[in-house]
Image 1 (cartoon, rainbow, N blue to C red):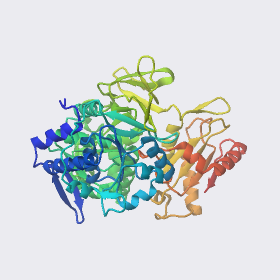
Image 2 (image 1 turned 120 degrees about the vertical axis):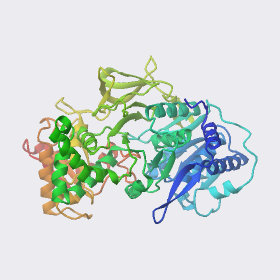
Image 3 (image 1 turned 90 degrees about the vertical axis):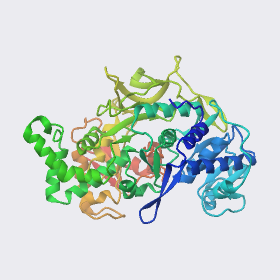
Image 4 (image 1 turned 90 degrees about the horizontal axis):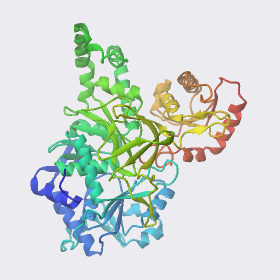
Length: 585
């Protein structure tokens, strides 16, 4: 247990215990890193807190940070917390309409952005109502003051010290079915989450090396950073997530957190490199085949073969992640079992965790001590988890939120009579306590024929098809289902041509269509898509098709391609059963 009640207390205690140990490392051009000690971090945070307090920022005020991941982001957050404010982490890549909506819901007193230019995206009414505008980098302008200037000012320490029941952070619901909704948590709830995660992962210890690369608007990344402060682990900060694989060996982390989409792309990249050589392709085919490595230790020959393959292939792949990596942690959505098995065979297991924005403590988690592939683990104490009506997962505990924040006012959470939060996720729990998820309750739909369709497993099959980047299955109230499929420049190599943008060639279309038909081969006839709408424009956060956690926003995709979808449904419903109608946009 942390023994502290607030984040400022945790930071103060850490800087006193190991003042000269590294807290953060920033990557420099040329592959070097620039360390920052706990003493330096604490001093910068204290100076920012004093400057904010001198400008009237006090308990209950809200500080909105909308900027890419950086050490400055963390300094601004910790400084605001020490001043008694509540910090809202906002994804800077939200579309303009979503950004305006979440800012209007938060009603921030202070707005922090990456640079002075970034404030142009903020609605004038929201910007003008804020008391202070802060740029993390660059020069100040008009009302905008830089974080460096705040840290250089000399003011008395804030008179108020935050308490455990004060609001500390604001995160947002995923926004898969609408605009993200603000959710606030107290310092006590933050500390509860830290204690729970550190109990599950003793590997996060003093001196452990972590990689901070997900957006700091991501709740799990924020809490992992807080865990690093509590334990004295050092965080290597990657500001551009596209560069994570270029820095991972240099950071040499003990564990790495990610989202399923990251691991899917990682597997594709590794497999492509293995396939480049006939020898490694043949060895890898055996190593990653179902049961290949997992059953290799049953006899002497099998053990010898496994050692050889591990030395020639698998060890070299693992070396790309450094020498210390023990496991990955994945959250935000379930991973397909085949992909979990693939990383298990590689020797770098992926421990799935399951959380919801409305509970700051992960609902369930796999650990090295207790894990089961295909599940999201056992409930993480102090959560109380059960399966309710229609197989919906329910959770109760001190980490559950009090309610959504609507224009600065709380709308109380709608709990069950016995205090459980209905997560909206469907699943089961086995006799050993492991939880398995089957999909979002809101994603399930009924056809006009009365048959129910569960889209998640169909979409998983499609994503494994050559050339497919993302897939969404639609059909609520329709006679048939269709799939909206995106093809990215990177996935086009699987269609036999080089990475590029623009329309698909006839050859690419043919390979793609054959792959889709093959992927859907054993899907039940009533649920099997009768049509596919294919776009070469990848789904993105900025385009509105993905949430900040890379979940698909179905309604946004339907709205964006409404006319093409309607035309495809009309065509598919008139086609002969078993044929696939394809439309390209």
